[in-house]
Length: 447
Image 1: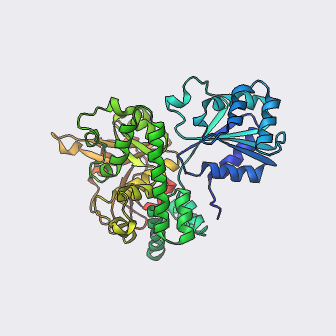
Image 2: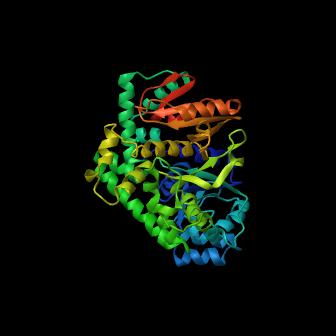
Image 3: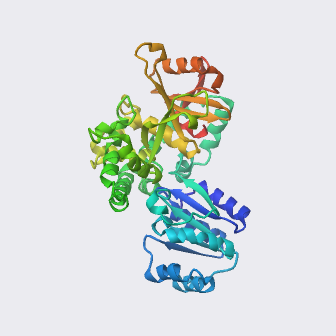
């Protein structure tokens, strides 16, 4: 089965507006579907296409890149013969897949775009770390596009449902509840999405088998691939990256979710681990969320670089990562999520899925935390802050049984001049109460 992705429309927009004057760089985690979407795009929108996989590049193609860059006629002739594909001027696509593994090809993009014969898409992960950009001039002709795991709507498309999200979007825009019966049905689908996640391999396994076991097996394969990548590519600090990766579920299970390096190394200092955190974030395996200390100004201007939370980029992978190689039937997490019985520690999955939705929508992740032992009125913790124009919107993630939102109330009072709408995301239907908009978790996709 083919999985429909929203990013396809962005590729099509690029093709129609660029006219060959730019190359598109798709940045995303391994197994997020970059190669698949490029293959699909090339097949549907061009007369011919070639995908050059730099993870498995042949000596013939390597030699062409290294020795024939000054003779483009010969270079293209070799590509055409090697891949047994005829190239057509302005109607062929050439894809540089996992381009970070062969940096000189990325630098070559500048000359290929200037030549103008064909269109070019690059895919990659870890494209910013110094090992992958060392000694090359990054082409200004690149337009970067992030690719994230499938969102809830794409997951429903895979299940054959194209009507639910347009309806709930209308309810969100009108601030109108769905009604108990429909809300219960959508929450049931959303809980399945939390467990399966948005990695295409897992979604496909789930939809084709109808069970969580196949999806869990696919996710274990992805996590194993990530571990292998750490071993192969995190040169000089693979032990630190592995330590952070392994500690991530445990960190999120605490009520205080700020990442404590002491869980990895009792004597660790942040400056010693900065590259390791960057490796996971740049590889789009994890999402950092920084403490914005002054929400009166732009969030990016007031964040603390050394104080942050770390979420998994895909909640389904977090579920499987938390199982620690156990069979999914041996763990209570699947049952707790499916039957809405999450305890306070397992609430991390709700917070993670909100972080995932916000990142999908292009938000950088920020939160607010202040601890004032001398004056409890100044102590508050807000899970997420997002920009809405010139206003800042605070977001709290709660269980359905929550009783109060004292931190949110104090935050609204203290920063009232800077704030837009305030949200609580939880397991119940939409309502507005005391100036706070309560949204069901699945509506995080609209923020």
